[in-house]
Length: 465
Length: 95
Image (cartoon, rainbow over all chains, first blue to last red; front, side, top):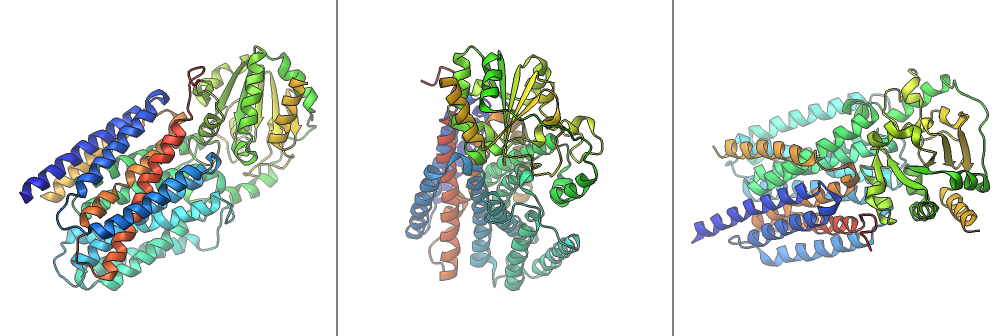
């Protein structure tokens, strides 16, 4: 009977894995994505239900965890604003890592501590789990702090940072070896390793600046999957390994896409403290200067009113100004005016992959109007007006033609080839990277200064008036 | 032998993951992240199956904390992904 039940549980896990795979497959199109998420969640529910059939488990305490976790989870998911999505994902990544760490700790505490039964393989996996889980947790918390501006989003660098990191890795190897030699009596090493993993997570995220957050979140997403995967090896559970590996692969692909979109290697993002390096380089390389041509709401109204095709290019500034609803309203007015409207989105616009798409979807912009960089660039000459809202580096032509620029080589949305460019910007302060943008001085560029939300509201008033 | 078998499962899953995720359009990358976040809460299943009776206080704290955090991940992740995906509408098809 006991064995049959175990078989049933494990076969159901396979079914769950299949449902996860189907769910992810349906994410290939916005039309089926929501159903895909539902299917994936049914897979999870099934796995949880059969796990509850396991022999000899402590229902009372499991119920406490399930109820508490569900309440917090639902509240957080319902209340979070779409602009705060990157923070939310960062926190959840962290919880995923922490849960895997705790599971490994629980296993060690209950089964192996003060016994000598743990094999070499299990010992190594235990260490791997707490290391990945621990650094995912603390790294995600730092990422959350930076995204929510609770701590400065500027890269934090100090002399000898690389040496400290090297020492941490050395400590992990030494402690790990000491633990593996005698896992039963290794409780102290185990606890220190958890501490070291937490420090390592902090150290790996603090040198990374705000605009590089899409890479970091993707990477932490991957780690949280790998942590679950490693925990699966600790308790020899297939479903943890399959699901964890799927998430791990997903995070790695996103990381890769983000790095490519910035034309930088992962190592460069992780270790260079981009922003600070750039400011020093930019000081000497201010080549392009000249007159900017400011425009009033009335000027911009006349330009837009006469345009046949308008493309909006949103950036992180859109999220900061929370102007997505105003942008959609303006887009609708333009469409009524027989203008063709689209939204061109750079892969690293915003603070996480797909950030702009979600904001515009929230404001009811239909997803068939959201176009990717590679789709819009070949047709740029046919676009009458490109409206840049809170984006800077992703439309900076220096990436194409200035070899001395720190962003040289990064693919951009080539709005400078559009007939007219309107840039909504607070002031002439350079963006995050601290580099001047020659686009602002071009003959076909007009600067529309002010808060994006207020500026667009004024524009809408012009159209209505 | 078990280790070999588990590693085989791992390797195949990673390949499958690459194939699946490469097909997700960039429009859906945020829901992909929050949805895969929910999947990484699969640790919950392991935590439930491992949280047996007869734990000391320390064990209980660790086990319950693992179940709670993983549940937040699972429930929060799926609910927020559903909320987001509900916002993606095709032109004119939405209303």
